[in-house]
Length: 247
Image 1 (cartoon, rainbow, N blue to C red):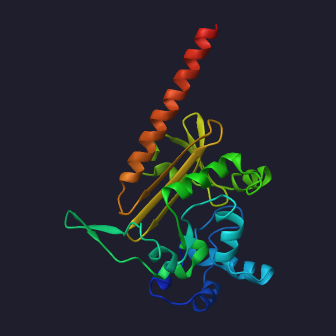
Image 2: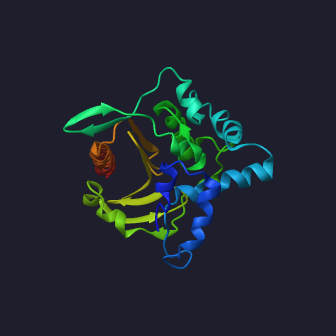
Image 3: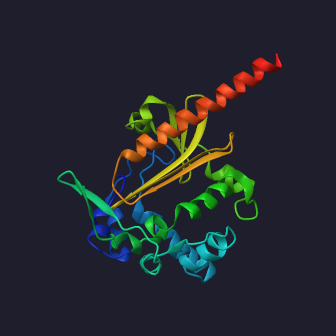
């Protein structure tokens, strides 16, 4: 099942006690036929990296991603968040009003799933790398591999706001591949208590959008689709006008 045992994460149960629970779950389908998003299982890679390199996950991210991409404020872990003075605290809505809330500390213990702190500027540099402009960090082969369609995700075609535009959807490696009208978008969204995040880009048009919100608001869906609908329509109109002039 997707998000299996997230309730145990939120109950502050340690990873080593959650992992054995997965032996009780039967797969929903054969490998390659479907997928289930799993915060707990993402964290397995941390132990693999440590055993293989002798370095913790946070150190490897700094060495392989944050430093070479020159991300100015990105960090890993709860200490990284609170050591930054210019930080946005989370908010939730109750009784028609927005209220600040505590940072959900539990997910920080599962770094590869939800343990990175980043600003819009940080994610802008990350987006530039995804568009192919830092091949020494993210090579062409890596980008091709992580963006390859793996599993069809029909449920995404029913997403609020997006369903007006999507004609096809797949899951790649960490990215969703959306057919947005005649254009392909790579997309990823995140949600933890009091925060929303969204990043998407068009490789063909070398265009991307990053949005971060310190509030659990579905407005992010409206903003994203508004941007992509307007931007892509303008691009195609410009191309049409150019072709008409050339002829």
